[in-house]
Length: 161
Length: 264
Ligand SMILES: Cc1cc2nc3c(=O)[nH]c(=O)nc-3n(C[C@H](O)[C@H](O)[C@H](O)COP(=O)(O)OP(=O)(O)OC[C@H]3O[C@@H](n4cnc5c(N)ncnc54)[C@H](O)[C@@H]3O)c2cc1C
Ligand code: FES
Ligand code: FES
Image (cartoon, rainbow over all chains, first blue to last red):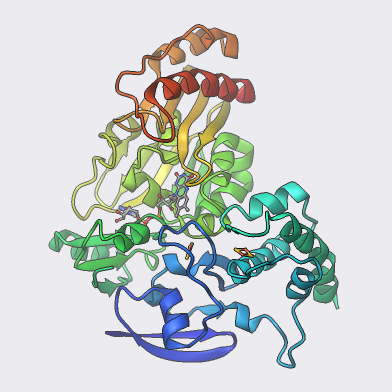
């Protein structure tokens, strides 16, 4: 066993883990943050995407120990403390961008990074390409793409405030 | 996943020492190949040695060569202004690897060390005639790849950087597997003042290879027409549920022409 210290959604934790413990296992099993999902064992589905130091990463393809000292944001850390949804979450709701919801945490985290890293704007093609690592078995992606396009101006307006 | 000890050495010398002294130790770069492999229990290292604290990142240009640190991520290669301007084929290639999250973690050194027969970068290194620098020596691209998942690297040898000569023109075209995103056939073409080099990934059972017949034709006439009549035999090419060897042989012609059209 070894110790890893990391900040998750603004709160610092020190956790005992094995060498093989994945970041997603630390989040789900040690910290009880089960919003981050595991949808595959081949690193292909993106249900597990979280932000490490602001960048979208598959938490199933990352050792917990690699995240020592890192700042992690999960789906649970996105909404305001008073429950006000993040614009991306709000737009997913408004545009019916989910059905069963299993892929949604990973979709939202990927989408937030995508929008943040493209302040100049995002074409529909760029949004679809940006979602290549996130699989949805329900929606056909159409409404997810619409939700992300709608969230773009809201997020950048909020950032400019 | 079997358990292992995790180490993160702070110097190259320490990393080499750990990796060389222990036959069951394995280097960890971006983990985008190694961790899926460990999850499938296809490999059982006793120690995993994280290379991320060795300072092996960065992209520099000098004297007609671009040098890329082994731990440089795919996303940083895809977005680097010098690479986009001087080796556009490489920037484009990096932008097509996997998906955003994979590109945020995966590294050039890890991909080259792994030498997956369907990986993208081996074709760039070979077509550009690049050089691998390790903790102990330099290895020319033509000597580095030694069949699928096999390279000239010794136990414990660490790639530190990659030197890529800047060509006059370059392009990468990829016919990809829509599920895994790896290349079914990928072609990197590079035109230099003294000739053309063209490397093919994804297709051969021996991994990446140079298509010398096409190189000769393209060195005389750098246009898709120059290679339109070249037939690649299916012998020795991969055949699987995704594509038969005959189909891959056909794709080599089609994708090579597209790559040349793009570069020209
Ligand atoms: C969903 C998905 C899609 C992908 N699609 C593609 C694709 O389209 N094209 C493509 O080319 N690749 C693809 N990949 C693989 C990806 O590019 C990996 O990042 C890459 O193959 C390995 O790099 P890494 O830094 O992640 O290495 P790791 O996984 O950390 O290591 C890979 C191997 O290299 C060794 N190693 C790593 N660094 C060094 C070094 N500096 N010196 C010596 N040995 C070293 C390790 O010991 C290990 O054996 C995909 C991966 C995933 C998960
Ligand atoms: S759980 Fe499928 S990519 Fe991480
Ligand atoms: S909403 Fe069901 S998998 Fe995407």
